[in-house]
Length: 328
Image (cartoon, rainbow, N blue to C red; front, side, top):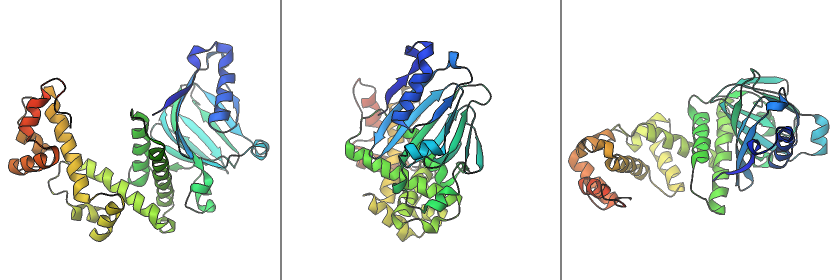
């Protein structure tokens, strides 16, 4: 899904910092730079357009970028930028706040306010995933969002964690998406970003109903994937774990065109198929694979697997050993 828009390794050393400044002005926002070691600067950017949003994967050697009030008055695309730090150490200052960031951390900042960002303050390379989208798409009041800019957002659990996982999964996606798919992904990411901000500020009640529904769907999907091994992973258990009614949970999944039970079943069967195809697991009993993914009774596993895949687990495993066979 991502395409390379800059790789300075193919450029002569003296041209690399200029190429970085020019490319980021076009692909991101216009900023000014200082390079602690310009003779050894190196950087790469891969990016994907997602409707009105853009997702970029960046890696760079140490640099300082800053966006002044004068630069904003000259050119402001009015974007929120949400970064997940993937490697190295980074700092960002905005509106009197400073975030000190390391791998896995999440931070939001605003193109319409001056900021300064330092990548690699320790002299080491750094990298990040960057989602940018129009401020107008954020379904939260500007003053609430402003209160968390240049603040390290919670990602160890909850919606910040879900947002980070979703962004990371998109950067690994190899399939090409249609224009409609990209617009839907952008909407989902913005809704998750809003939910993460609202959760961080304990203001989830200020989210529109559609944002709360999207956030609950993705948060419960992440919960489902983490608990597939549990045979007691029922819609009721999922609803209880997320402090919502069973009726609300079912309604949210209907809005996504699916059911809670169907989502659990698809995730389990997909992992069973993967294990049945794995030649390193040929000596593991079919029933043990079913039990590993939440089907402790062999008869239930066989019945459910056949209903979804169209054949029994044993037959699926046998066909998987034939070149080109058993891909569901």
